[in-house]
Image 1 (cartoon, rainbow, N blue to C red):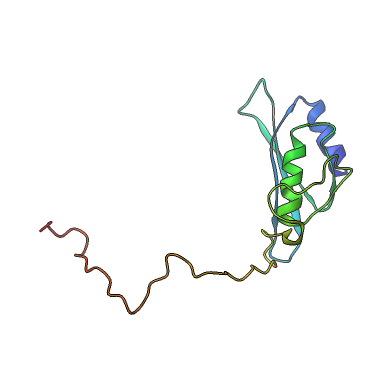
Image 2 (image 1 turned 135 degrees about the vertical axis):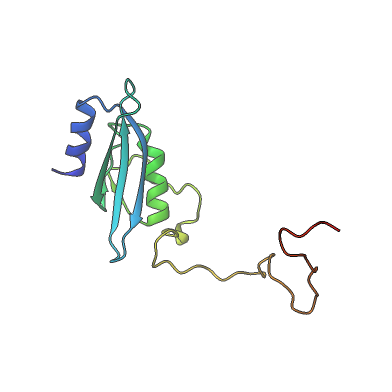
Length: 133
């Protein structure tokens, strides 16, 4: 069964809520789409579906998928065929795929604010559990 056929089958079984949809990049490099579907009359019952990317959009069956698919497309650089609104959500187009394991992080323009300057002495602390002076 295709991704859309699996989703349609769950919807026909009464799973009328798309709880979340995201992706994960496996160690060998393949990106897998995962979604959780819930019944509104039985919220304790859920189903997970996984499929290798790219997949077809399910936004026509679950309107809430529009935002989830846009975020997943942006963060993992996967395409959802037939998506009604493929605009980026958070990051510029040139930074797509920032959550992929093979994505290169941009260099910092300024040093990390938590970096310790070795020239400045650090405050001396007592070991944990010692009485307070």
